[in-house]
Length: 440
Ligand code: S3P
Image 1 (cartoon, helix red, strand yellow):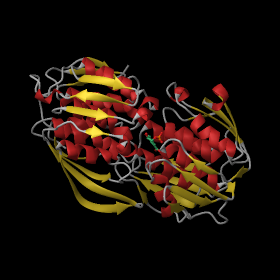
Image 2 (cartoon, helix red, strand yellow):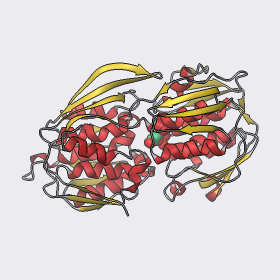
Image 3 (cartoon, rainbow, N blue to C red):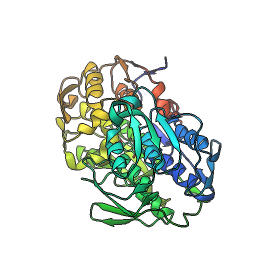
Image 4 (cartoon, protein in one colour):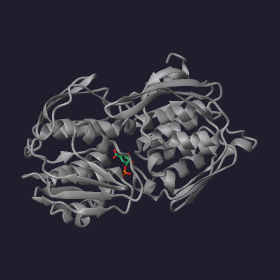
């Protein structure tokens, strides 16, 4: 079983890159597979989650040539997918299974979608219910609440759906299904979730209208869309987040992370960290594939606790594990509320982060929808945690957050079950070592 040992005592210094954005890579594979012609997706995320989506499309009859630099996707047009001969394994990826279910609901063939033990525990009813309203025929465990899901492709009709949760996976599953439905589908969400699908639709010139918090899309475009000769995936802000917090909380650090996506639906952590007192600069701002990007420079700073309420949850959702680490060493109290979605991620992140950081000496009280973290910054521990033997609970973001927490401890930290880091950031340890040895 893989594990990681973190030896504290050195600052993080240097310039690094992070993997391509995981959310955008999934979507880039989907959209180029449905395009007419050959696309190149460069700087894509080579994490297991995205590779599983790539393999899914290969089994759906799409040729994809994979190299470390690019994916060459031989798109066959809107109706070019073919029935796979076996179940599709989405591994650990909620985005993979939910977006594929939406896409496959309107095909004229049968598919079974499944994933690892964590995926088979996560809620699927949130997409199955609206897709069934569109006419989809989907079966699954617990009446379709849990994977494996069996999707009997059907003729779909447009619906108007108001989602009870701000979720880009729900929104995107419905937008993909809507491409194959008759009529105009509308999707409304309570707060804006990450908008990568909308941006990629526009990048491929697919007509999508926004009216307030509602998206409208006409189904069955007659000609489809052209391939992208070069679709450059921005660096993943959620991967950069570990080093943004790491550089802030380890004294003497100065880190620049190049070419990171700074889509405002993703960068809540920047707002929160800036309010906490972090020293973060966005340099060289530009655009790639309809997404804003920048180089992010971070120098260490003392942090103070803040309140993070429901308004900031969607754009910070994947960064709460690492934000908990920042809060644990800040001065004063950080209160997170309205974040009950954290309980249905790769692990129950309120429970797993509370348990693991408490073992390291942090003071955390769990609430059903968040937590209260009393930072160590003003205690005699002066912002330092204790090195422990922790575990990831199979959650990649918990594993990497604990590694960063370990950098602020007095003694080494050993983290068990770290193979899950492969799902999003296979080069995490290497990049961390580069910064710790000043070779970045
Ligand atoms: C994602 C959406 C978010 C996020 C996940 C990736 C996506 O999930 O937590 O890591 O790529 O659409 P929800 O849509 O469930 O909030």
